[in-house]
Length: 155
Image (cartoon, rainbow, N blue to C red; front, side, top):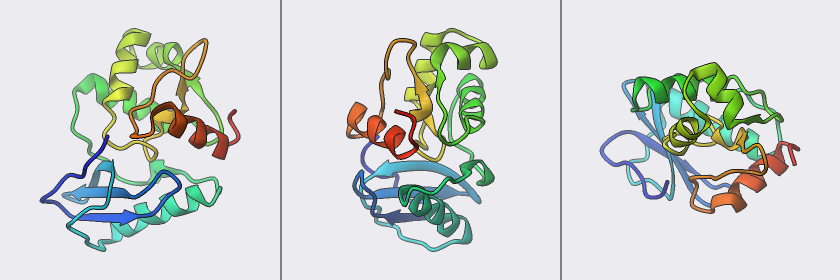
């Protein structure tokens, strides 16, 4: 994802991947985008999400499942994203493993993972292919995914 959602409260932070912006709507996290947001607000939820990201990039194990999310997506995408939140820090799952839990095929899981509007916090980077890393929707693509997995000591 690139660019930032406008018209809703946001908070931005610096990261090894570049500037990241977290967006909130109705007390729930709805997006994480690459780039610096224009509508900077320090709500308790956004400050907590920023703190989790900063601790994460400092190499600390974090549990982003403690945040409240409401990303826009289909019921199937929502099921897949819930499964992603269950993948522990420092571990990976294959697209096929997520498909077995959420229903559908590995390919449909790939579509849902690629549509994740809250990457890193909803850890789509922890989903890998059976024979390699698979893809990554972040601006830096597989290089970003590899960096995140290295940070978590998965690769």
